[in-house]
Amino acid sequence: MSQVKILLDESDIPRHWYNVVADMPTPPAPPLGPDGNPIGPDALAAIFPDAIIEQEVSRERWIPIPEPVRDIYRMWRPTPLYRALRLEAALGTPARIYYKYEGVSPAGSHKPNTAVAQAYFNHKAGVRRLTTETGSGQWGSALAMAGQMFGIEVRVFMVRVSYEQKPFRRSMMETWGTEVIASPSSETRSGRRILDSQPDSPGSLGIAISEAVEEAVSRSDTNYALGSVLNHVLIHQTVIGLETKKQFEKAGDYPDVIIACCGGGSNFGGSAFPFFADKAAGRKVRLVAVEPESCPTLTRGHYAYDSGDTEGLTPLMLMYTLGRNFIPPSIHAGGLRYHGDSPLVSQLYHEGLIEAVAVPQRTTFEAGITFARAEGIIPAPESNHAIRVAIDEALASKRTGEPKTIYFTLSGHGHFDMGAYDRYFAGQLEDTSYPDEAIQAALADLPKVARNPA
Ligand SMILES: *Cc1c(COP(=O)(O)O)cnc(C)c1O
Figure 1 (spheres, rainbow, N blue to C red):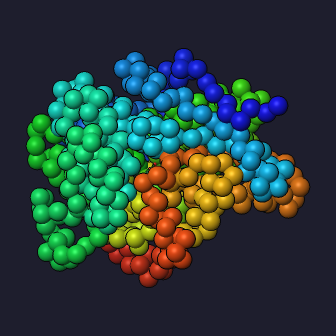
Figure 2: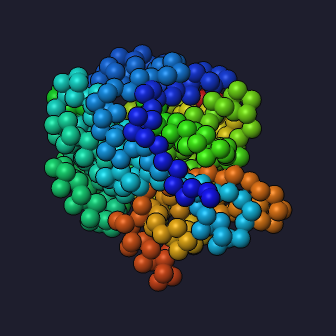
Figure 3: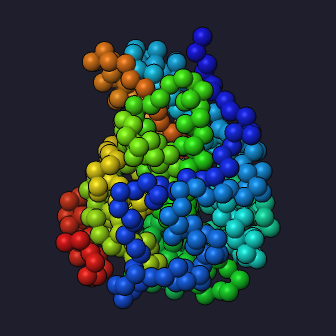
């Protein structure tokens, strides 16, 4: 009989994170300073501890996971890999569907995998205070929990639309001892600049990042932590994919396709990069990033140097971008509404080594509900994007009769997003595709640097 849950022992928690840079055919493009020249690692020292900067620029394949971090991982890791037998039956597909459930973490998503690591490295460097941004609140709550574990005070700038839509995420952060501020706020110069021209701005991740970075730069006791996008974050998230590989080995199977939703890229990178190592060694496996049609960064964005925040406080990174002034439609997958994407994910996509697909909002909820009715777990709206594509793959398999092994990462549960499900059931969710004019207009906003690809 097939196992429904493929479980590992705590001793199977990886001892090293995997760094995909070691297996990339071309080295990553360097981040640039405001003058258009590559920055040195020291340019990041105002907001990150040395250990994290080293990981950010590392080309080593394996990076040791400190024991205190593994110790905390043991509270919920290894996470289960499920064989979705009931979903397969409901779809009538010959495909085998597997998913790894990251919603078993205390914060309910994959985000604590990096939050705990970042809090640890900051604590070790003597940092007492961290600022960050959060979209729908998953990252903010992960860092709130991790900060608490290492005695670090955390201050979260939360995108205003989510601050209002998701009051219980705020309560979670406050329970873990964190102060939450709606962004744009009047507490920073960046926030005030936006409020002056747009007093009821819904906010965006780009604006919230500006506020959090501004505060970290201006205070010597304060560092900044980012929940996605940067290389070190994707490195920490590879515990997902490394465990998945062991679990597939245990199940005696191997995926034809790895599917994960992609906002800033840490869930996708963490899930898919360990399989990229196999692909680089000649094994056949497809890696598919899924994004919302309303924020189509990889599929319709420009591949160009752009800043990570609205104000232009971060270094310029070569990535797919919709422009730093992008204010996304207020869809419910708040975690997928960033204007840019991980430079590593962007480069691999640009080189044709991974795939990306954009899906409209309503069909993602339809897929999430099909999943919940078969498997029981109610997925986060972000995760519904991956489920949509996994179900489509399984239905394609049904049409051709060709059995296939499909994997997706269930990046979190939807318990704090039931308002979004309510709106879906009430027929109030819309499919908003991002207008071409706005995508063209973003071109004019891109920083003028000589290294930008034409
Ligand atoms: C944040 C989040 C995402 C998107 O994550 P990235 O790593 O930035 O791509 C996906 N799913 C859930 C549940 C999230 O909280």
